[in-house]
Amino acid sequence: MTTPTLLAGGDYALVTPLTAFLVVICLCFLLCLIAGVGNDTTADFYTAERSLPALRNSLALCGDHIPATALLSPIGTVALTGYDGMATAASASASMVLLLVLAEPLRNTGRFTLGSVLATRTAGRAARIAGAVTTVAVCVPLTVVQLTVAGEAIAYVLDTRTPGAALVCTVLSGLLVITFAAFGGMRGTSMIQTGKALLVFGVVAAAALASADALDWDPGALMERAAIGSGGAATFHAPGLLFGTTATGSLERFSLCLTVSLGSAVVPPLLMRVGASVNGRAARRASGHATVMVGLFHSTVVLLGLAAAAIVGVHAIATDDPQGNSALLLLTDALDQGTGGRILFTAVACAVFVTALASVAGLALAGAASLSHDVHAGVLRRGRATDKQELTVAQWAIVALGAVAVLLAALLRGWSILFLASFAAAVAASVILPALVHTLFWPGYSRLGMLWTLYGSLACCLLLQVFGPTVSGQPYSLFPGVDFHWFPLQNIAVVSVPVGFLLGWAGSRLRPPTPPERAADAEAATVVLVGTV
Image 1 (spheres, rainbow, N blue to C red):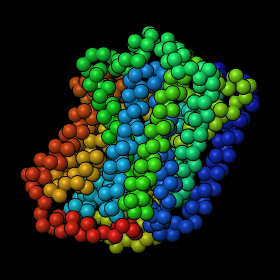
Image 2: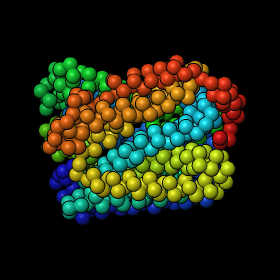
Image 3: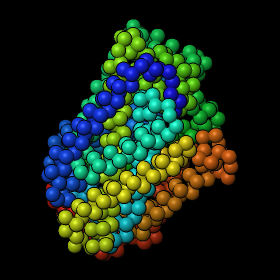
Image 4: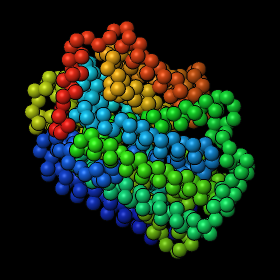
């Protein structure tokens, strides 16, 4: 992300965002310390004793659903690509409808990690191990992406043009998040996610109102001016600017929307958040509230994208950052120039910073919970680990996963991370979703079908992604100088999602559930809706 001259107004422009960042860090750390005092048991650490009210849990769900990339990237995508960006935002809203369908039966299992939910359908340790592998395969790449975006955004806001500034911001952000998640657990991350959701909603609403006022509250002028830099309304408001109008481009656009709408609903932090609800009805109610709020958020994102194109200009956005990630910051800076202050820009900068911290904390907690609860306590210790032992392992797992993510983010500095983002989203849509749907709604789902879904679909995602354009053959690839790709799509869900469902069906038909598996299913059906399992 290239730093523009918009922050070159002297020390005041630097000190204000920096001071705000320091205040936010102190507040977050204080909240995590307060929350961490009560984390004496695994039930406290993983699920906050399932004591979160529905409204607060719905705000935390919104926080988990809106990472830093969802705050920055969609606005730029709408500004640069018009219809295609709007379709992607609509798909993100639709993902919450899917979570609404899954929330109550998922919570009624009494489990909070993917591996433990899958273990309700089959005896043995294979389900927990496969669930942990899948969870880590999603959480680590997403954490690297969030840290990278956060580092670049923070360096951008602070106008630090020295070499390695974004790298330093990335590493420091990662270390902060590790501390927050390890101390705070579910209760601490819930506090941060709730505050983040309120801040983000307030900031985007203020920016939307300021944009509407700058355009004299004229929707026609907004749509007309937004389309000027993209070849006119006929081009801007029609499909094709993002991937082209060819058959491959249309398939790519559909696959992207499929990935976003399916994968965003079942990322591990959201599953863990649903598991922390008081009961199934509370989970459904919280998901319903979150669905409405996320829909309003993405509607506002579309408005801000159009406003960025109209006020800042498509050319200026593309020149500053070809991906459009700086569109929101450019827009708020332009709006602030009319007031002579930096309030809106600084508020957006804080929202981006808090969003990055909260998102990475949720991912670290979900990944660590899977390793400590499923692998250590469930597989290695066979359920004989004490609360203190499991809690210690969970905290060290957060440190380990965080350190790996920070190291990868540092090593990949300057490289394309599109591969990681696409792979993680595809795994969520193609592996986690089919496994959950089969587990929750199909009595004939067997151990073999589950393993085929988890490992077979994971291998399919890895194969298609490695031999796709996100790794080689294109300027945006991880290795742009070589070309060994044969799969034409960046977003592979159009192939991998059906494969995931078919593998589960085929494996279960080939080897139906055995009596021990049916006994495990019957035992899971009697799980009390409170407490942890």
